Length: 397
Ligand SMILES: Cc1ncc(COP(=O)(O)O)c(C=O)c1O
Image 1 (cartoon, rainbow, N blue to C red):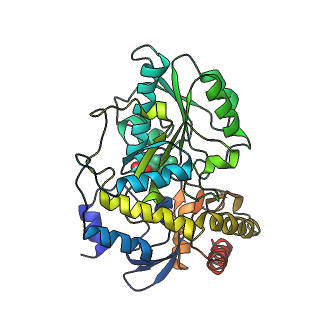
Image 2: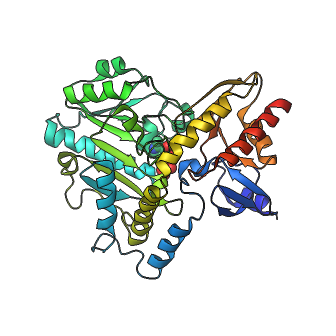
Image 3: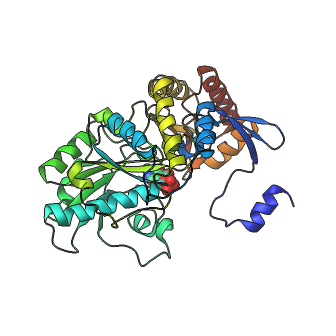
């Protein structure tokens, strides 16, 4: 059996990958099992911002792996605190709760918001509400898909979790109208990633922050995908000058090597957690902490945030200059770019399959958007190669 046949035989069919078998990665490149090289425009849904197998991160991983890896939080370790100190200082959030995947950190935020509503805000028992946006993507747990506006994500996964209210994304007036005395939090992506790189109107988040403050509602920004330089700022909410009450990080926090996530928050929000309230066997483990600490140092030393801003602007301008009837819009911020195609003229999946043949890997988001979110270490020349490949594909498709 070929690798593809074996995977088709043994793996659950919950993804529809492009037919390529990757065996090696370095920087913005990956190689398949025939030795063919590709530029990675996906970065594992933005988890590989540092590039594949960054030597400093591989070193941090292997050194820590030979010293101490997993002990659980039943004991202290010497590396968790330095990691949390660095990320708290970088983000201006006073405290952090370590988890592993993005969805777990989102669940942590939801629990924190609910308990804060009862313990601090005085919401009546069982009444706490969390406001979320249409088009959101926050992960795949039962509670998280309960408030997805994507029918497939929750179809036949009920009974669903109550206590969420959906409003239109990008509409601050809708937020104001939805807030009640029972509202605990507003959970929002500063730029919606999985919805197709959707950028809200300028000043949206600022207005939301004002409304949340006025009504004593927590503003929780899910920056699992948009955070850590992806959009050309350390955090996407900084484009609007907003400091959220709660912040969710994941993906690139693990340097492309391990799942590492965090819920960070204000003192009074994090103070709701007592020992035994919440936890994770692997959350905050020494191996993850060592890699994440080094990943944050690399982010600073290699000025990856500034790089994302500069090269993102370059890539956006190069993509917007492509003359093709198939493109309806190219939008993005930093190296977080979506190309919206006219479904009458081109399917995003077909474009991705043709790009693959030309040595560029990307993936469709919904039917119509091709995502361009390369590792932040990408160069201008590599961007030029990608744009040239896309131009050729659009000319023949
Ligand atoms: C904004 C956002 N939140 C949460 C998640 C879930 O992260 P994970 O897949 O690590 O659970 C994602 C994943 O794409 C995401 O984009």
